[in-house]
Image (tube, rainbow, N blue to C red; front, side, top):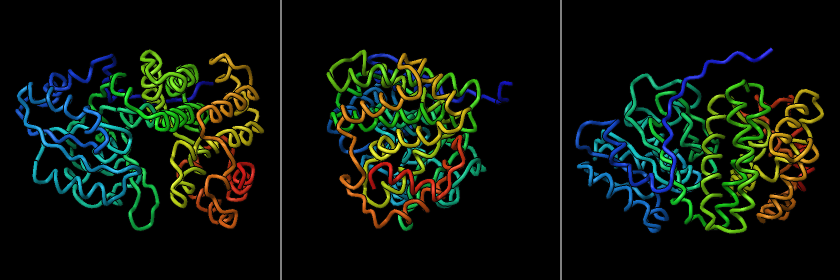
Length: 381
């Protein structure tokens, strides 16, 4: 029998080369006033010229624009608080997140606190925002997190370093602008890390326990797009068609997550990032082949993996694992955990932490701390 689901499209997708130049026009569809508008971004995006492109479009549309450009990678509660301080002075009618997942998540986090008060810790979980939130436009400049199509902000507690998934339907972007031109400035390393992250999103959401027909549709097409286009982008960063395929694939993976969930690879990756500063995409990628092998001992999960592999033309489960490992090596993300800075003495602590991660509960095969210990060992810890 097909799984029951309740799907509500929340985010309008605007895809195409040069679509970021339409930001002002699209903003007026969400707010009729002249502003002000708060653009949340980071210094790298400013240096790349993307912030000027977006702010010019907004100003040409008669909107008053203010910029917060101090977002950091893997944003914490401190980043959200810094953005909030600016937002309180601006009193915006619209928020625009411009950049990678960190900028988009910071924009969402600011929106939670600006409209509903309190601390980010108060929104850890789902549906805890009691009041309406400001309209949000998400403009990704990387092809990886899929935050532009999700109603969750992933924010780390600055004191405990625990990553908090704070989700509410009201936090979803009203419009996501997917302009492949903005992703041309991604450095090769960022391209690799975010691209592998997108692949992991598609793989995990396709087999997780909350999957259903709609989420599977998004995940399947995301996997086909990302597995086909990431090698091309790694070979030629100016390949605009491949950049577009990755950007759309990442957004579809975000929709897959929004309608389902993730699994053990992300649960195992979070402690690696928290303890060793390992970039999220690399941490997830290194763990993913081992999680697929672990889950494939479950017949139903193995069938799902085979279906995903077949959709991308890479054979069966073994082909899936081999292809993922080949992409990791080609992108320079592979290698044993000990060579990436992980300490074998931390194995037990890492495993216990991984077992407590929210996404572990949605893995298609039950996974406990002892299982995570085995996964870390398989990954070279």
